[in-house]
Length: 405
Image 1 (cartoon, one colour):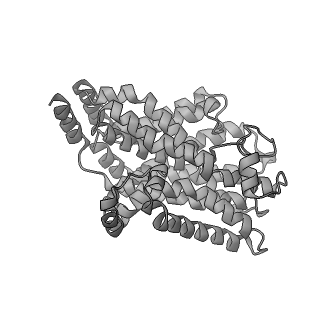
Image 2 (cartoon, rainbow, N blue to C red):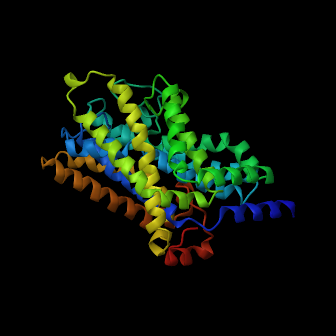
């Protein structure tokens, strides 16, 4: 009875569901197709390289790379906060293991393997079939330095690996904010942070402090040594966990959306200028300036995206309900699908824009078909792709209604 009472109080402090965050999550994950496809068409290291080098794509990527991951971790933090009110922490830990770690292991063993295979093919490291590669090379736990990652690897699934461990680290915080004392602390913080422009400045100051603490701010996606990434991403998840319990914070973002937009445009303008500025004209520490301005770009664009989404996208419909379930399998599949498509498309000899659009369109279509025709209809695959098991007697109803479970 006491647990039910505490949960009821927690649900009340969460307020109504923030549907705009679902739209932010869906859009951010969908954007990964555009971003990772673009990696093939610039001269930055990637698993498959087309030989093209688009300046336009680069200018978009240096903008979006500052904030796209942090905003996903914020939304994930909100989801974690909601889940922790509906179950015990022990049940929460089991849910995280099944939802995150099981799909991670499956992806490393099966889904990610073609990425390494096609990279090895293009670089002339291997020339056999995928089956030969998978059975003789992929599980050797070795690293040919011509490859971006070792065998086997998690590649884009680093996000799931990090999120799982952040969920563990945050267990004490979840226990605290699920208590009456923790709720009182958050209520005081909420009352303070929603005043004026504090919701814009406070996280920005913390981001800047984290940036200045580290000598090396490169993000390498190597779990055991990616300390700067852990600092900023764990901070982002923590914000999401806490903001979920402070409903009026979302209104503060909405109220400050134009202020955030001004900062966002100015900071991105400075970052773009720095990017286009010839090195011989730079008389200052370019790396320090780039990182510092990047922090301003990061938080201002997160704040304005949340603010405008709160204003215009705080509603739901059948499309959102469908995408809420589709998006996790979509994420797991997307990079492998676009690398397979890209490997074949870049041999067309077409222009860069044509090849890029072909990779993007083909990836969306194939990911959608794999989900709709295969994954959502087979329970074993549903679980391996992070979805709920649907009893056989309810599967037909589920497929007909397409509701996120």
